[in-house]
Length: 168
Image 1 (cartoon, helix red, strand yellow):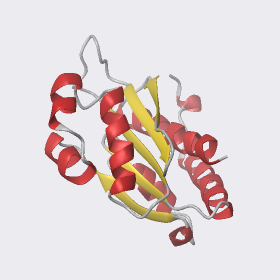
Image 2: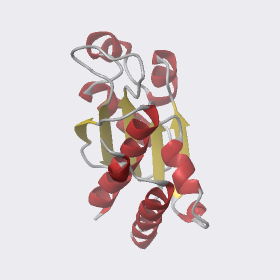
Image 3: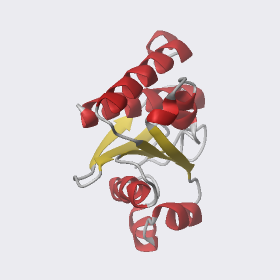
């Protein structure tokens, strides 16, 4: 992937502003549950002045233990499917809503690289999940190209775009 297609800070900021306006217009609060982005979605959101009107909290859960303790991901899910899986991201996004006062959640888990990839789950494999309180979670698989930063930037952008679809 060339540098022109990897979202820059200005693009991420503009997406976060749109998410904020949309959440605020619908009187919704957001929670983030992040693994491979390590809090980058929450950081992008909290760069927006006034975000306390629509942002509840962000959880960065890298380890299996953190995913279990903070988000309620079942050990069986992690052992059977791994951290980077549809099953895990669905439990992460649901757990984020259970463990927060938010009404909308986004969760991400993936392999940003440079190591950690496998033939079945190469570097750039990312699962993103979205859910509204009382609704059903949705998960989407992405395969991003580029180095660690490029994968993470693309993940943040995709997560924010998905929030716009989830709230609309």
